[in-house]
Amino acid sequence: MQCMFAYCGKLQSVPLLNTSAVLNTSYMFQGCALLKEIPAFNTSAVTQPQIMFSDCVSLQTIPALNMSSGTNFVNFALNCNGLKRCKATGISRSTTFANCTLGPDELNEIYTNLATVTGQTITVTGNYGTASDNPSIATAKGWTVTG
Image 1 (cartoon, one colour):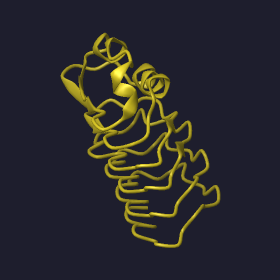
Image 2 (image 1 turned 45 degrees about the horizontal axis):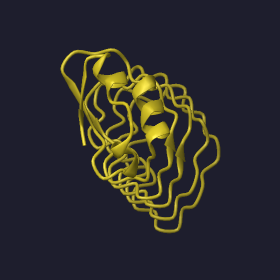
Image 3 (image 1 turned 90 degrees about the horizontal axis):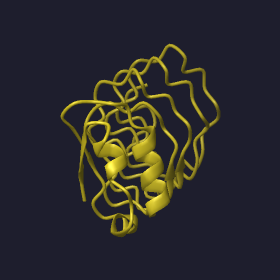
């Protein structure tokens, strides 16, 4: 499903698709500026979710996606200006939630749902919640928090 919906300028939602055997969702929704919601896809087999939601400026929530098989999360949710919540679990490689609209509780939820790692970085620069979030949740799991 790599690039499947990338830059679909009028896409606002997608139906629940059978994604149980999908390995690559990189760039799947990149630049879908009007995308507001997605269902909780079965992402348990996905190994390549990089840039999956970057520049989805209207997306408000990333549902509870199991990302524990992922090996590349580069710019996973970069510049999702409308993103208020991410319930994804199991992120285990460096990733970015920069320039979103994440408050302190929502950032703490992301930190809580991260996998325990060694030497990975999560970037949260540009979120208003960084003034009062608790990055020690992530650092206790081996993450470096930037932002």
